[in-house]
Each structure stands twice: as C-alpha cells, then as structure tokens.
Length: 360
Image (tube, rainbow, N blue to C red; front, side, top):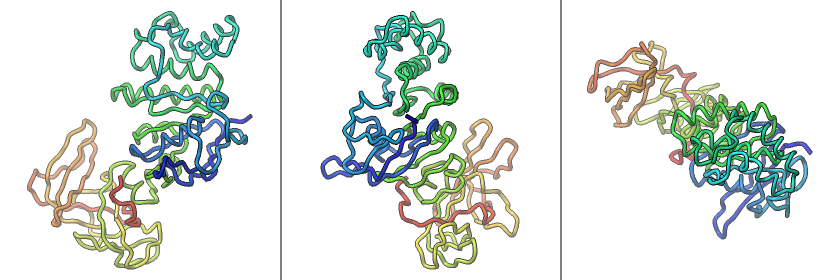
C-alpha cells in the first residue's frame, strides 16, 4: 500500500452545523501537506476524519487507494499526534516509544531494536532511561513523533503539535520535523493556524475557511499569488483597500478606493463595476516612489523596530491605516505626524473579488 491520501467530496456535519463542505483533494505519497486556517475552519475535523475518529457525513477517505469507510482508527495505517502529545509522564522515554509495539504484542527484542533506532533518529539516543516529565518541551515533541513512527504508519497526522512551545523552540522544531519527515519518507499531514509553520515546512498548503478549501499550492504560490480575499488577508500581512473596479484592461484593473483610483493585477479577470479589494504587501510599499508608481499621500503614524525589520504605520486621508516594512538601512519618514508619499508598482498590487473579505 502506498501512503497517498485522497478526500473525495468529504462533508462532515454535527447536527445542523456543517463543519466541512465537499472537500476533494489528493495528498501524494511522502508529501508534507498542511491544512492552514483560523480556529473553527474545519481543519481538525478533517484530520480526525482521515484518522477515523470521525466518519464523513458524505464522501470518502481513501488511503493508498483503499476506501476507509467503516474502518476504525485502530485499523487504519495512520498515527495521530495530538496537540497535548498524550505521553505517559511516569514512563521512561523508551517505554513511551515502545508502548504501541507492546500493545500489538511485538516481542521484547524486536521492540527494543525499534526503540533504539528511533531514539537515534530523534537525537535522544542516551535519553531512553529518563522519565518523560524530566524532558524539555522540544524533547517531548520528538518522543511523541518517535512513538507514532514506532508502529510504522503509512501516514502521520499532526494536530498543532507545536502550539504550546515558545517562539524560539517552535522555530527550531519546524526544522526538526521537516528533517525527520525527509529521513523517514512517509506522508505527513499537518494542522496549524500558524502560517509560518505551514509555509516553511510544507510541500503544499491547503488554506481553509468556514469548512471549505480556499486555495491549495506551495508556500510561495499561496503567499505571492492568493486567489481569494480571505487567503490574501490571512496568509501574511497585507494592506487591503476595498472599492469597485472602475476600469479593466489587459492584465490590470483600476479600483476606485476611498483614497482614489489605484491599479493592480487583475488575476481573477474582474469586470468593471465589480466589488473588489486591492491588496499591497507591506514589503512592496516604498517611500517617495517614482512618478510612474501608484502614489498615495499619507501621514506617518509610528514605527515598530523588530531587529532586522522596521514596520512603519501611516494613516490615509480617509482614515485607514497602511503598513510598510523596510529592512535595515531602509529610508524612514521624519516622524509621527509628518506628511509622506508612499507607493508601489502596479505589478505589486493584486485585485481580488470582495467576497470573503473580513473573514481573515
């Protein structure tokens, strides 16, 4: 059996509440695939449906081409790592890792060999005799991964396993997780609301909103080429200027906004009169832009220093706020209250339908 996963028009309802609506997608064998979205969007419900803890109201889950209908979680070729890890605190690290093998009746010698191999895999080769409650947060994460891998699943399912860690440790564990996945070569399906996790670790990302998939793509495509207003607003920072399409010609559209007409790429081919939102990433804005740029008169409101980056805030004549990000050595405005002109090239503006705007 291969380790590919397919969702065929999967819907999940709880009473009158539709948690997941007609989701169809394929996760390739050996792929690191993430579901990204806000709380309540349906991503954890999908994970539990793949694992067998929830049966779809409609549609099918297939793993390795086999229909999983009616097959419980204990008989599926999957392992699930919960958000709270669910390790046994009074057991040793080795006993935790070997627990699933012991339950399956694997002989002691084979069990010990597997545990030793996995301890080396997670770089805890000399920690097997420690109790779990003696470990750091990052070490516990690795033990949970090893315990899941011990039963040799075809698919490893991870439900926001890094959410309880501090920022530095989360960033470190992203690299650890990705490295482990590449070494073992099995399919990882990862749930997160943290875009940094999804973009840095995943081969592909599915962005969810209100039970539906808004977009699937690699991290760069989802960030640089969002297809909906929700994705543009949820994935990364973005300046959003709502309005109506005043003109559309070729690859570009002009949106009449509260601060005047502004151009951007019309990737969804919106027609004149359509409700739209113009998005401009903070890193695409420039102070004192050239004459052929889209220019906006603004007032400097503040600056937030963040080491290698500074985030500048401006107010427009309509009272809305814009954010601009500059690197070290970048030009800064004179100070709060001073007048300034910011701008962007039309290629860096993105015009999208207004539907879903404000959900992010």
